[in-house]
Image (cartoon, rainbow, N blue to C red; front, side):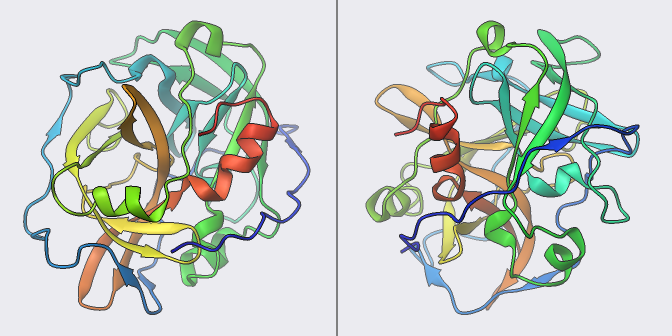
Amino acid sequence: MFRQTTIAALACWLGCTAPVAGAKAEQGGATLKRPSTSVVSAGKTDPRSRPHRVQTDRAEPPLPIAAIGVIEADDGSCTATMVTDTLALTAAHCIFDPLNRVRVPERFRGGYRDGAFTVESLIIRAYMQPGFDLKRYNRTIDLDGRDWALIELADPIGKVTGTVPVIALNDRQFDALGDGSDGFVQVGYGSSDGEAPVVLYGCTVLTTWDDYSFGHLCGTVAGDSGGPDLTLVDGKWMIFGIESGNTDAGDMKDINMAVSAEAFAPEIQKRGGTVH
């Protein structure tokens, strides 16, 4: 269902050498037009029925909320998740300012809620695939599967927050997330003005594309960018995707678009993260 090619050599680390302008909070800018799609369990999810947003963790086992937090800057915020002791995973468009310049956010706050947080650290650099360009991402579908980034923190706060493993789902596992019987959970700081993690239960995959992205109807909004899509595997919550933007796909209008872990799992594994 997804391409099985190896990710190309990635860009060098981008140092934070200037005042931070801020993480972009919009969900991908202009509406994107998609090519032909591979639909997972088409027709089994009513597009009018969207998961309910809650601000409490009622999952069992508990969700890894402490490892999920916000990256903040002057003009907005995004969501990120600790995947190693010093690396957090987020969306690539979150490390650009509105003028298409790389601006690494200043800090990450894990487990942030209403001004309090479990732990925080300055961000010293970010890492993304080569060729990612915010303007091109907003105007085309060419870079959707590249909308991911790793941010390196000054302190090993993953020892405090814990880290979340990553899983690159196969076709059968994606099908299970699209048939309405075993939905996934999305966590992000959207719809709360970035003040608390918002948890969406019962999300389902609608469509997958061959650029390492997929569509769903969780209700992604500004601030959710980079937030993890989680599935329960062998009793553990694992990241199988991150939130990116909104798009149209054939008859499906304004569906949420996420990047599959197949895009970033190899790099996370190379840098010491747990990948299944």
